Amino acid sequence: MPGTRKLGKKSDSRKAMLRAMVTFLLENGKIETTVTRAKEVQAMTEKYITIGKDKNLASYRKAMSFITKEAVVKKLFDEIGPTYASRNGGYTRITRIGPRRGDAAEMAVIELV
Image (cartoon, rainbow, N blue to C red):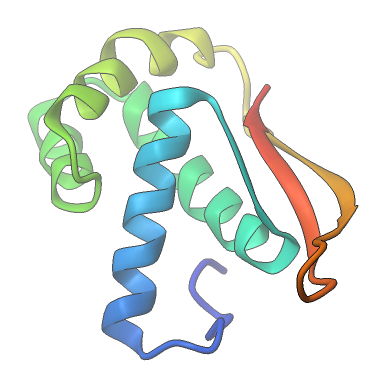
């Protein structure tokens, strides 16, 4: 279930961070972050890719309410959604890349498959 980790933030700043990370992942295809954040972003991204596979006005508006850039929503419905039309899930991959130099937090790369 997405949204169960608190990530050391209040709910409004956590939601803003997740919105920004999901938008950036859908825009660029790959981001580097901590493992726990990557797991949260993975759940939210897969949810919105599933929404992007269904082309109707209600799903477009639902995606617009969460994703912060209109161009990314257009890309989701025009390019990303049709690409994954035959898949039933598993649109993203998390790869662990080792500890961060400053505080030894476990880092990961999350990317679209």
